[in-house]
Length: 238
Image (cartoon, rainbow, N blue to C red; front, side):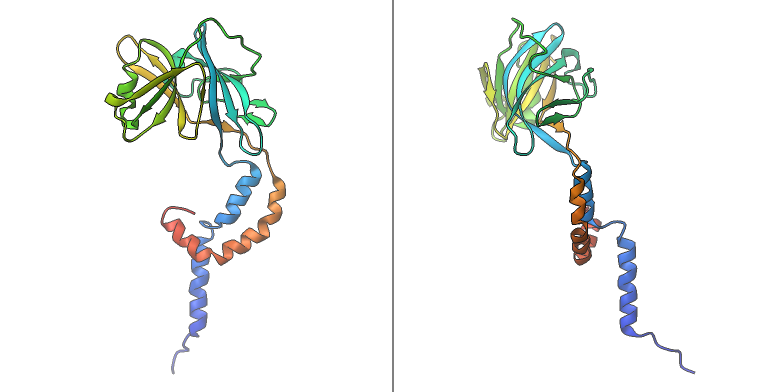
């Protein structure tokens, strides 16, 4: 007696269903992205637009910075206070927590803390803002050429500029372009130079639950693009 042969299209359908079941927990890139955005969990960086002034106050370095929030809002002035001893060490936070000024909503800083512009008064110990253009791998040698003390740098990385040809400048205030980074430097008497690079500040984002109304569309999109998402997952992610 011959055994019943499986129907070919049922076999193919079963295989596709098995792949979909195994891959479902790994995929859904569009829907996951939508839910993350609605919850406000996506990391947003408020960009530093410039340094208006810098000075030392007791054992702290204080900067008056122009910070540009994400979205259609004008830059805001922020006072950023950093203990000199914490330069080069992340996680040494001061009391202050999150900071809000109009549309600008910042998480607690990884180093130091934020203050409203009128909470601190500039002292006579005003610092010049140094500008530096150098290769990234030559940053340390360039910083060791600074005099002993605390320095604020508007830093630009250039692959064609080694430490020997580093381009230095100095100003009372500096406007930033998108390639400029803030560097806080503590040059020690032993020749070492501790530094902290500030590319931007983590910004709080408000929850947008109305975006979840788009979930039927993202689910449909995930279903249509499931084969591509499976390939993306096994090659590194969505």
